[in-house]
Image (cartoon, rainbow, N blue to C red):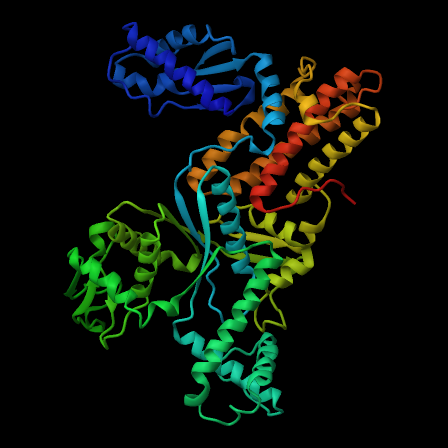
Length: 581
């Protein structure tokens, strides 16, 4: 049940009736006709822009169209009143029994309420985290990890077949630096004093890796040239670090479906094959690029390069894929990697990247467009920085990591549920302040507590009703007479419930899981407001000691709220609380 889609269908059918009656011209497009919650709830339950968007193509005044539309809509038993506002917006109020049906629908569908088939038959690859395997995940990775996992959950909720993927950056020079750093810890494990030079990783997290290498090979590599140990130590170190990263992700409740190694692209013909495919399409050529903006002519040395004609697929400039020494640029293996995604049959690709990858967006979209013939879409979400605060001051250091706060540090201090929810309280492209003190306090200012508390309150009401010998099974509650649910504060909660399916579709269509967190906070706020009004107005209390029928109706409303909160938290990977300490 998507009440907004149902009423939108009703509006469009009414417009078709106006066309059939000759009151609107043939050939009008209704694609931009919407039905949405009004900005001011006092104006009604829903508002449609139909008259506004059809005025110009029909050659009529919007208000005249709105009046004709209102007359037809009033014949629908679900619509109680219509009101033409301003130049032609049409506000609608729905009959009370419509809201009662929303509660029944939630209880009948349970956590399937809000699901849809919008993604049915489509495969989506969500690539996220993809951190270099040179250290533990830090707080910046945490935001991308939570966002990616929540987005995957959201897309699954609306029917997509989702693959969560981690791209292991194990093909570059940074893995050699890792191997040399582990070798130093290996020597240290043998009692030698070592010095970490620039380009190595001094964090304590490599101590155990050096000891593990000693346990495996003994003194075989001690004081030996790196030509004898570099390759083996590189592979050993990468495996050890990926094991650590997997454990970090598990602590946050994240399990990847696929790990793809960058190294597997080299020496296998994968990069050459992807580039040859583009060359056959006339998209690879030898040429000279114009100097970058801001460069003086005397600082620029024009040289012929092997280029990808990315401008033919929406990029600003063509991009080099091969260096002057004949080696590949960083862009070439990225092309090959995304080529494998296209070959694996994904209909949509989503990459979750750090904010410093802004220059990567257009070139990669161009590559995917070229590789797929325009048939596969790529959406790149950039994650802005996270700033940590504790005791009112910036919190930066971690002895274990050396220079940053790790994902594990964060989870151990506040728990996975708090970490996940707070990371979704801002849109991905907005900076996020993570205050350790605020996220642990029990107040409205702490969004995760506020939402969890609403669910826990609902559970406490359910337990009290059960003590009154009221049948609180969902089947019975769905069949309860709900006519007593009519106070404005109660209907406010029901109307917010009705928005859930619409909100889910919008969030999935825009790849914005933060909308789920925002909605849950608003729903929790409406429930808390209703609860508090019960302290002033006894008839609004959820449990009416001498009236089991009315109590059952109110319990049905509370239970519906719990169902939707539980479903929403499930998408975000957060467990709903049944009790609060």
